[in-house]
Image 1 (tube, rainbow, N blue to C red):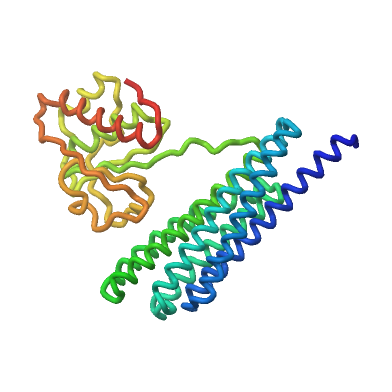
Image 2: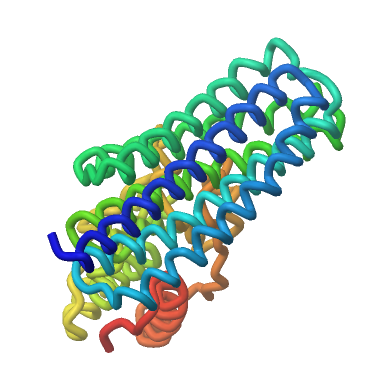
Amino acid sequence: MSQYEARLEKDLAHIREKLAALATAVQTGLADAGGGLLAGDATRAYAVVLGDHPINRASRELDRICHGFFAVHLPGAGHLRFVSAVMRVNLELERIGDYAVNICRETVQIGHAPAEAFRPRIEHMVDAAREVLSEAVAAFVSDDAERAQRGIVMANQVTRGFGEVFDALAGEEGNLRVQELFNYLVVFNSLDRVVDQSKNICEEAVFAVTGQTKPPKSYRVLFLDEDNSLLGPMAQAIAARNFSQCGEYDTAGKHAATAINGNLDRFVAERGVELKTLAPKALDPTAELAAYHVIVSLQGPVHTHVEAVPFHTIALEWKIDDVSGDELDNLYRTLAAQIDELMTTLHGGEGEV
């Protein structure tokens, strides 16, 4: 090994050592934040807040070392990917440290341990967030892309579970003071963000090892209308044609008409658009709405279609005028414009014309 190669390996080992130490400190802070929350321990909470200062210093130091590595070695290929990923993971770990501080500040405001009836849910959230972070860190420091992929799956599962906990928390409105309810909502959001950042660390691990970048996100959109004979099927068809690579699109009505509008199939076919829904359908009351990123009501308020909007789902209400068969062209242009605006905002770029 040449002197240069020895220096390169030494500097890489130093970066790994600093990253591992930072990750350990952040994991300890998160564990102590969760323990303080569950015990209602203000002393422990304040210790985590103070402990965030050395974490921030360590993060700045790691950033400086990485920039120095670039200046000295002008790395390429695998080394460039690794150090670039370390810089992003460094930022994500620093943010997780900040979320732990948020939890601690809310713990002090709450002033006591969670009620026994609610404690298991909070404990589950804390444990799940810690587990995902642990998997993410282990995958990155061990250059294990397969473990990182499993961590991404785990993070997605935990996020869906958090939605159920949020719904349960909202149901506690009558049993908690308003201020306390807000405190727990901040805690919930902070733990949810820990999982998101941990998922990002897993994605950086995959990139550092394989060079595979994060694939473009695919969005699931549900269009709702009254009887699913016209508006919903048209919106679904337009979205599937113009933004086929950006998402998956479904439609349903409050109830189902006996058949699709007689003019719709011919009208969209003339424009090169294929109907995806061949028969109207009513919204299944057991449908997993949390699987959708966006729910769009084309007729009336969203709450008239669904009992509750999941925590991570965006609900939109579009003002679409009732139309007759000879006004389909205006309806098509209106829907196409609004779908284009929605998907461009979500995904970027423009759909087909």
